[in-house]
Length: 326
Ligand SMILES: NC(=O)c1ccc[n+]([C@@H]2O[C@H](COP(=O)([O-])OP(=O)(O)OC[C@H]3O[C@@H](n4cnc5c(N)ncnc54)[C@H](O)[C@@H]3O)[C@@H](O)[C@H]2O)c1
Image (cartoon, rainbow, N blue to C red; front, side, top):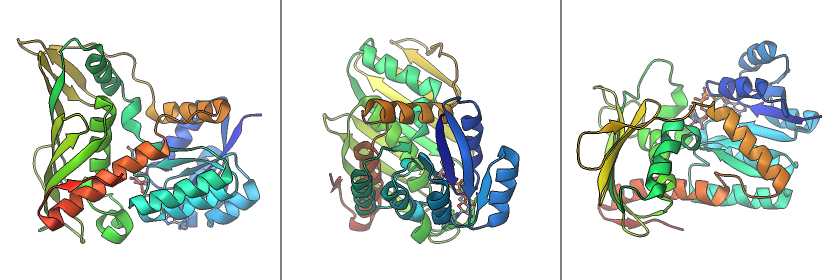
């Protein structure tokens, strides 16, 4: 008998988790809950599982081994702690929560419940990113010095749920949502925490009370310097990370390709097969459950991403560099 999995939230990303579960023999979806019962019912019908309106009732009645939390960010703490306190392992969507204080509450519940919690930082499972990490770790381009990460895409697009534009529910705008991916990419690929942040943020002209874009200067523990630039205003779409080393450079277009130069023109690096990141996340969580080891995107690491996101807003408010809270 495999692991029974219940999904909390039947929105956009829940379908990716349920589709991944279909590909895994060791896991089986059993139920899905959404306050909009119609959404849970439609998804439940598609996957042959039970629908609920109340996720707490679902956890209590179904007693799943694993709960997948795919809720708006301000509900991550409540759902993850409820599930962990009832003995469920948790796959929690990114970002872990809207503040480090909430992350600490989640960690306390996971400890009480004696369960594993992993945050779904999908960047770790994308083929080009994995290949980029291998180049960095091979040392073939020398010491890594600088990173420029640029992500521009219109944020107020049809189909984006309303809660994303409400800071109380989302925690912030593009810098929270896509910033979590960029910060994860920088910290995971360098293997270093970001320790200092200076940010400037624009709010004008964006829907709701979230920011529309901003730029930041980030420093890692050993002094790799990175710039982060994100705009949710209209304009050409960009998703590019460039790395400058002592002996070369590397251009990463996540999902599209990887290029390396040791002084001349960029040459494309072949990347391996492109596995489904949502499958990889479940496999890592199951491995953590079965070995007792911490999963790849463990709580302390995932909390560090939230800490950097919080520092971006703090730096902007203070008009000064901020040391990231540990
Ligand atoms: N890893 C990725 O690449 C990726 C991509 C998209 C979204 N996400 C993350 O996934 C999470 C969900 O995002 P989404 O785009 O699917 O949002 P969504 O709004 O489509 O889905 C959230 C669902 O939760 C439901 N909900 C709200 N309150 C509830 C409650 N109290 N009980 C039960 N259901 C409730 C809503 O009705 C909605 O259907 C977020 O953390 C987001 O950042 C990650």
